[in-house]
Each structure stands twice: as structure tokens, then as C-alpha cells.
Amino acid sequence: MRARSGVSAPGLAAVRGARLPTGMLPGPPGGLHRSRGEEGTALLEFTYLTVLLMVPLLYVLLSAFQVQRAAFGVTEAARQAGRAYVQASDPASGRERARFASDLALADQGITGAAAPGVEDPSGLAPGSSVRTTVRYEVRLPVLGVLFPGNLSPTIPVSATHVEVVDTFQEGG
Image (tube, rainbow, N blue to C red; front, side, top):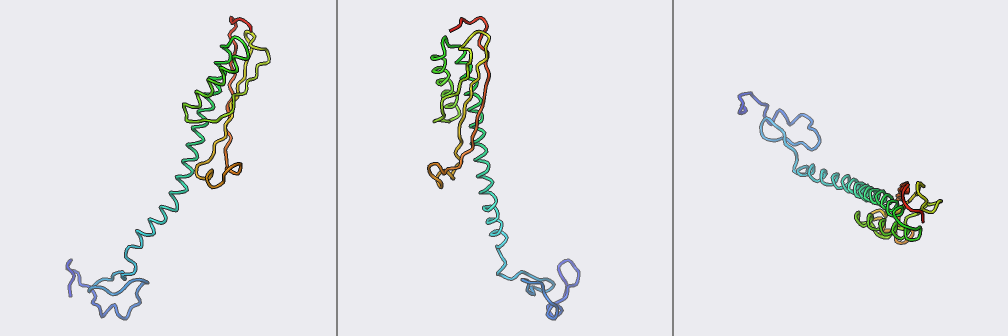
């Protein structure tokens, strides 16, 4: 018996006495084929492994994006709060302006519910003095916040500090 390529192949009789690998059956003359029970399992295994590996990877990416968004937001909020504070005429209105500027910068990143920015101004807006503003926010992790309601919800703290100098030629408050 000759195979299509012109090379002779052993018939079924030659294969009958030999041990076959697991899952292999004697097939047409000159070859072996897989048993029907093995068909399609590679696709099934690939699908399960993809789900098992991709779901945690997707969760880690979503969490990292949430934290990065919050980091951008608090950094810009601290900067804008400091700039707004030093342009005020007195510390009371400066704190109000800093709060508004901070809330606006955080809203640009979709962050709500952050505490008022901390303002350290030991000299009371004296010309040439430094003012330090700090913004803190706790990022709630996606999905886990639903599973652990209230204070049990896992969070990642994010904070930023900015130092702004009061203009030397500004009138003192």
C-alpha cells in the first residue's frame, strides 16, 4: 500500500501489536488519529485559563487606574489650593478660595467627597512667606467596596503637598 506522497506506509496490521500513546487510536492506513473524547479540549482549556488569568489582571489594572487618577487629582488640587490661597487678601477668604480651587481640580478627575485642603500659613499671608497646602484622599478599590461595605472597605490613601510663596509686592493682610 502506498501513501499519496509515494512513500510506503505500514498498514493497520503493523500497528495492532504496538503500544499506542494515550488517547491515540489506529487510524487510516499509515497513521494514527486522536480519539473523539479529546477533540475541542484545547479550546476549552484555553478559555478557562484566559478567564482565570485575565480577570485578576483586569482588576489590578482598574485599581491602578483609580489610584493614578486620584494621584493626578490631589496633586493638581494641592497646587491650585496653594495658588488660590496666596492670592487672597486675608487668611479666612484664602481658606475659602483654597477649598473651592481644590474641589474644582478634584472634580476634573471625577473625585468627590475629599476633605478640605490643609493650609499651613504661619505668617498670615506676609509678603515673601511660604504657604504649604496638603490634600488627602482615600481611593476605594473597585468591586471590593461592594463586598466590604462601610469602614471595612479597603482603601489606598493618596496625598499631595504643594508649597507656594506669597508675592513679595502683595499687601499684607
